[in-house]
Length: 99
Length: 206
Image (cartoon, rainbow over all chains, first blue to last red; front, side, top):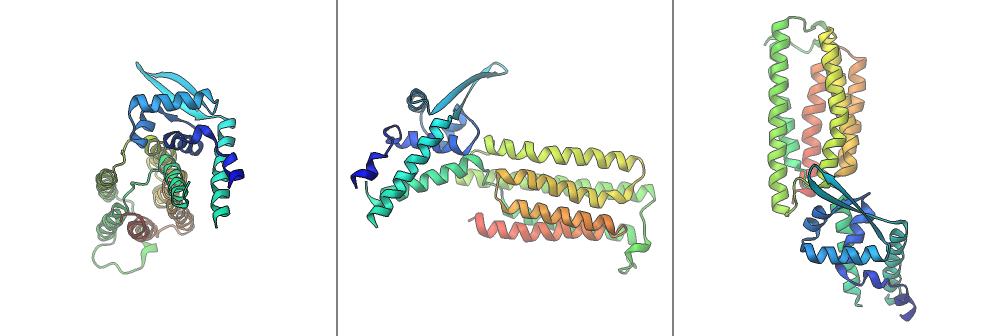
């Protein structure tokens, strides 16, 4: 029981962070507004979770302009993908152990 | 953490990965209707070309008169516009029911990826038409439409890829058998759409 939990990534303890990571792993990149609609969360909430993931170096931010509107897109880093895989593996192990 | 929690967590991850990467509000019903429009259009075209007396002796008839070509062109445009507007309308409705945005990153990618083969094919066909190669229409429309479906299928249901492959195959066969254009068109745009529309309707529209 204990050993499986060791692999759990603290950064993914929060559900929204894990959801953000799922989207970024499945897509090359994703912009802030689409992410907000997909997860139905508020601006502030999403921004703070994105900051946390950025701090872990799991995602990178790319800021640009679409015409005059700022357009911020996010992409998963190699580190982030690896961490996501490990976390899923840990979840899987936990299920196996309990069987 | 409970078993139940882990399963729901994994489920939500899987759902999000799929929903973010693929546009799943595409309506199957609109495929069926597009097929029906195509069948009606093909019947009209058939009578226009062969008259009411014509049997199944296609090969002898070739379309040359400009008036008839113009009328055929008109039918094709009407079928296309009707199919597209039905498709857009039903897809918007389905997206609303599912609470998904119609204009999202995956629908954008779907459209761009389909537009490239479609526009290329459309222009090529127009150029060949202007040079008098009427026989190219049926095979070329089927092939380029099939290529567009295969290209777009990465961003929506994978079944679309198979529909695309069947359309391409049909187009290639049509290219070998000039004179049977309307026949292959009817199968490709009519029958195949109805079959695939039904499959998608019963599998995903619920």
